[in-house]
Each structure stands twice: as C-alpha cells, then as structure tokens.
Image (cartoon, rainbow, N blue to C red):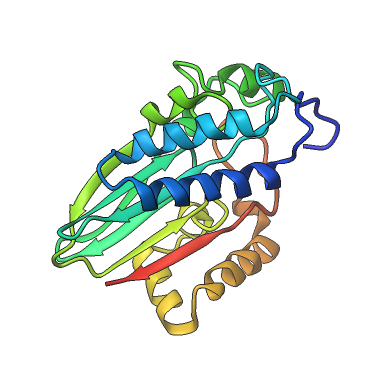
Length: 218
C-alpha cells in the first residue's frame, strides 16, 4: 500500500517469489511432512532471507496468502491460508475450500487490520511468523474419482463471490477457453458491474484485485 511503513526493504513481489521458491524446494524434498509443516519451514527460511535488514516485528511487514496441493499417489493434500481458495470436483460434486477469517474481522481500517494480522481472533497469513502455518485450513481428498482442481486468489474467486457465477461455470469457462479466460472475465465484470463489489458493513471494495490461478486436470 503506497506510503505504508512496512519496516522492510522488500516488497510483496520479492516475498511471494522467495516464498514460492522455498515451498517448491520443501515440497520436492520432503513428502512425509504435512503441508502446514512445510509452510512453517518455508516461512522460517523466509525470515532468515530478509538478511537482518528488516524489522520483522512490524505488523505491516509484507505478507502473502497461500494455496497449495500435493499429490501423494492415492491422496491429494491441500492447504489454504488467508483469502485464497482450493476448489475440486470429484464424483461427489464440487467442493470449495476457503479460509474466510478476513470476512469476520471487527474492523477493516488500516490500523485494525495490522493489529489483527497473525493474531487469535483475527486472521493468519504467510509473513514473518512460522506459527501462522498451523492456522491454515488443511485436508486431503482421494485421488480416485478426482476430476479437476482450481487454486486461486480472491481476485479470481470474485466470479463466484460477487458476480453470481458458480464454480461449475468457472471450471467450464477454463476448459472451454483456457485459464486466462477466468481472469479476463473477472476484469470484464469489474469494469461493467463495479456496484456488485460490496460487502455488508464495509466500504466498496477496490475495483481490481490480484487475480492468480492454477488449474489441474486428473
């Protein structure tokens, strides 16, 4: 956020890239640990990667949401931390896994959000505290019968949260026109129907949000 004192010489882009690298290494090297343990180890490595140049106690320190899955042969594990989603379809239908704690904060101004980040009663995010990983939403699903999975940030899940599409519509859009079509469709709705970007008790949301996704087919 422009003008915000984060206490850090790095920006969120640096953090996301470094965290992604550490997660990839840990997922490759350690198939026995739970995803929450892998995330905790990656956040701990990230702390050291700041190189002692940053104030890691600053509540505005750069942070990232996390969504990841791991194939273990007969099972597929998943983890969600903060406002991303893992959505999967199998013989039982479509299941969306969310971490919705950011929707239930008592206040949403800059100061309140900073004080509630990585705190009980607030919300948890990948930043400077490895303990946040233990608060992630985790689980697994049988690989047999699994048809497809979608991992996405809340900028992409706006299609279902605000713009009245179902997850089946999102999957079909991606299969018909490619994953990029999901983001293009989000942007088109944001431009044509900004009045829909509202939540009770909150100011209108920003017109555009980070939209990232990965689509897996089985």
